Figure (cartoon, rainbow, N blue to C red):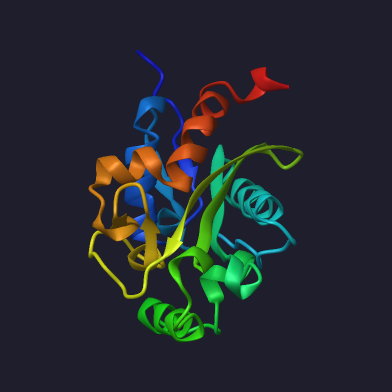
Length: 204
């Protein structure tokens, strides 16, 4: 009988992020599970000063908790006019319990009146793949854009409604799934991660 491959663990409890990664990584031809399938798994506090360090910490914790090949991401929005904020604090910007809409409104208030040429920003994403506690690989992707003067679109989450792609004249939240997967920071990082997932030990 053929051996069923072990699943790839996506180290998230966010259903939207899980769906996105399933689409981005469909080429790897593995079953997917997430931390939603391991409610007792203890993945510790996010530790690190960079997206890469935080992603590696999460992937290592997820592997140790489940024994599975584990992929974790850390991503965020860097706004030049705000000194790079929210950066690595994007997920908890303004504190726990704050909604995406509240964060976006705060950013718009901070940037009120700024001309478009001063509204430059980028999304960054680092992915980490943990083969073992001591064997973790990272890749990164980025997407340059501008902060729109109002939220637009309903297809994304987080800061997507604010992030304008000037060449398309659309925010990330106005893109189709196919467009977003091709252009986004997470899509670019996922493309770089696919060879590592397929053969994680051959890339030393």
